[in-house]
Length: 357
Image (cartoon, rainbow, N blue to C red; front, side, top):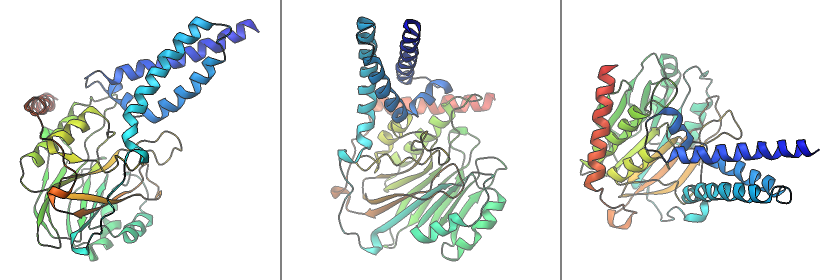
């Protein structure tokens, strides 16, 4: 019995200290893939820590000092996770409840279809239900473009690029597009969409549809981060309000996303609304938000929707925006020169890495 108790405590301690170590790793400003992915499961880590703290408390009589030290470490880690996640709870705020006239509405929908997923019509049903003005589709191939072709009847303005890999991208729009380009941001080999969308008022706004490569064992996070930062710089250098949408392969609290938002002065409507995880649709517990719609001042978010499962590993994500007077919308401070210089340095390092590869 004594040895069983000791083994149980050691298991709790090992799990708790491992989660605490993973939290410390996430604070390191590194591009290494296994460090960066520790940013993803913060909610799951927080839930596991809460359970482990309760378990460690059961051993206070037997191993008082060790238990108290372990609980202190885990509690500090849990508090940090809570601080990071707090903005993504409904308790932190709310979306605007201002009335939005039809001519000022802009509904954006994002869906990563998963390349080898069967296009059986369930996604088109949701597009028709939510009636987006702009629909960004990731991981498309020729079969998916054929399956989505009926959308062109109501969304005739399109731009797309298939790659034969997981980084095909397409955009369907009810609203006219201008100066549309497929660009390879920061020297990366994944196509991104850069365009202008003409609103019903006749005004043009910037729109970026992006899908950078994720950090994983065969590649660092450098390329992903460079694409995100370049997107922020494109908006920073434009005098029009803009929107960024896509599967960023990054959670909203990650350093690269924070810097992209700072540079582009972007608002994340999830903050104050809720967690809304969009990946992994095939798991009931390992889920986090990877699909995003960010906007600059001049827009307010009036509704966010996570769509239904359609066979992909991502759920669709819908943001209903309203074009408002810039002075009346949420604004962010101008980025400092240090952040801009660091972003340009990251982009240059990514270009060099890409050319060397």
